[in-house]
Amino acid sequence: MEPKFVSPSVIEASNRAAARVRERLGGAKPRYYIETYGCQMNEHDSETFAGQLTQMGYVPAASKQEADLIMFNTCCIREHAELRTFGNVGFVKELKEQNPALITVVCGCMMQQKGVARRLAQRFPFVDMVLGTNELAQFPQFLERVMDGERVLEIKDTDGEIPEGLPIKRNEGFSTFVNIMYGCNNFCSYCIVPYVRGRERSRRAEDIVREVEQAVNDGFTEVTLLGQNVNSYSGFGVTFPELLRMVDKVEGLKRLRFMTSHPKDLSHELVLAMAECKKVCPHIHLPVQSGNNRILALMNRRYTREHYLSLVRDLREFVPWVEITTDIIVGFPTETEEEFEDTVSLVREVGYSAAYSFAYSVREGTKAAAMDGQVPEEVKKSRLQRLNAAINESVVGANDRYIGTRGEILIEGCDRRGEPMMFGKLPSLKMVYVKGDESMIGEYKNVLITGTRFNSLCGEIE
Ligand code: SAH
Ligand code: SF4
Ligand code: F3S
Image 1: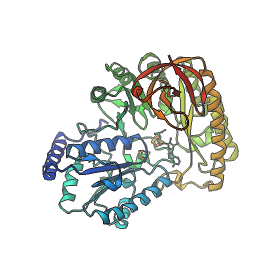
Image 2: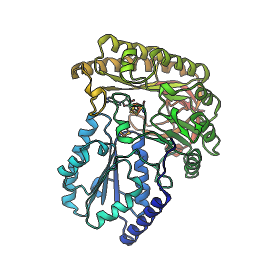
Image 3: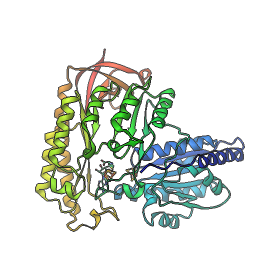
Image 4: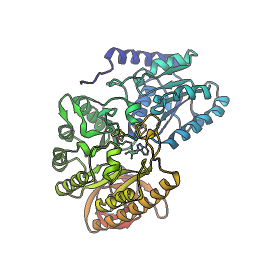
């Protein structure tokens, strides 16, 4: 099914509302502060809200205390994210007492969960606006209503439409994100994302290429293409490997990354595109979740351990120096000690350069939440600790092979713990520490790797 787009008339109405707000502010420059939780999808939405606020005449605030508008862009992927959000929204009460004109907005994935928005609005009467994940395009209209004294609660329970043509204010730096698709169709049994982000929908390839060109024009040299499962991208017949080849041609772009890849849809064509496209970095984030086939089936991941390992072999054969990172869940309902050990052995077998590990967290409304055999918290905790020990061992082991090699890093910043060192990443995502100074930030430098430092490498600029 072809995706629906937010109609151009809605985008125009939004631009007109933004212009009205700007006029109403009469040259005043109120300050906004956006606190973003969760993944890069939310970061990207926050950049769009920031773009709209800029269009309306707002400027960024250095802290919540200084802000005239505070926005919380929430996440609900695991339970603790939710608890933290409610806590942080609660703190605004004090700020509102000091500055009654303060506007408070809460939006994002968590607001899309059944009953949460209403509960939040009831508990925190000072919150002026609550939005779901499909309301981005109308934000200026909603802000206008708040300025008229109304309390706005807008959450559409739809699969969402693609908003094209909204302004974006990108976070500063040299590396940025471009969304290529929204939503998810996979319904992994533990995951809330398909419920709060709606069905999968892909942007048009030409819109993506244009956005990348724009980002390059604005000074970004590294772009990460984003989606919950980029391998199932389908922009009016264009596949993900084809899209990579198109974006790879954008002049001025130095590095192209993408995430996240679902193993069930990773094709050999993608491996070849990674190998052949000069700008595509040799890094892939390939969440495995578990190393045990029974658990993988219960998770509805639709691949086996063996298939996953065959993908790793294919990547290693065709993409020189490829680095693989992953996500892992321990303590999925009914997971036994032996099944957990399968995950540990897989971590050792693959040799990840980084692995993000999570204790399974019950998400209401998902299939796994209703499963018998929930694993006790202490068991999850102990498995997490043991898994992390295995991850740390295998990561450190894999770094030694870089010593004596050469590569190019993009200098990102300065680490001031101890003797100040500049740091930047190789295309593979490995971090390298070098001697240098802050004038180098944003530059690409050739380095010789001379040693390792914690989870990273150290080297000398050549
Ligand atoms: N679309 C990506 C993942 C997005 S969520 C993918 O399919 O790989 C990021 C990570 O959060 C997941 O990979 C998973 O490891 C973790 N996660 C998701 N739901 C979770 C839950 N209920 N409990 C614990 N971890 C979870
Ligand atoms: Fe969640 Fe699975 Fe979709 Fe990833 S692919 S967002 S884990 S349902
Ligand atoms: Fe969280 Fe929503 Fe991303 S639930 S992880 S912010 S898609």
